[in-house]
Amino acid sequence: MNTQEIIRPIGKFIEWTFVNVYEPIADPFNAGVLILGLVSLVIWLKVLNGYVAKAKAEGKTP
Image 1 (spheres, rainbow, N blue to C red):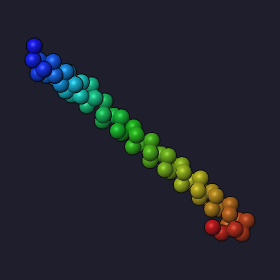
Image 2 (cartoon, rainbow, N blue to C red; image 1 turned 135 degrees about the vertical axis):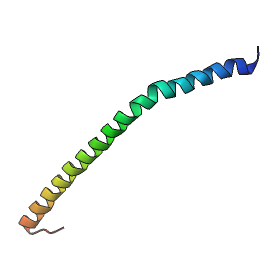
Image 3 (cartoon, rainbow, N blue to C red; image 1 turned 90 degrees about the vertical axis):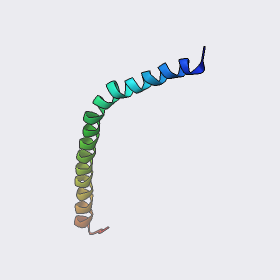
Image 4 (cartoon, rainbow, N blue to C red; image 1 turned 180 degrees about the vertical axis):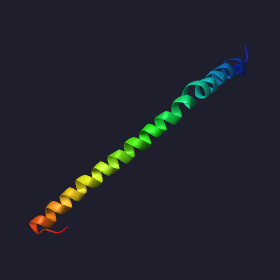
């Protein structure tokens, strides 16, 4: 038995897994992460704007 007879099927299985499992999942997942990041950024900027407005109202400009 040759080492290549053990390694080659494992490599083919890993390649098959990436092509048939991970690549179809990648696009929707990446889009979801991007959308989540943008929504979080907008929410955080609104919160910061509220803090700045409160500080200006109290006379404590940052």
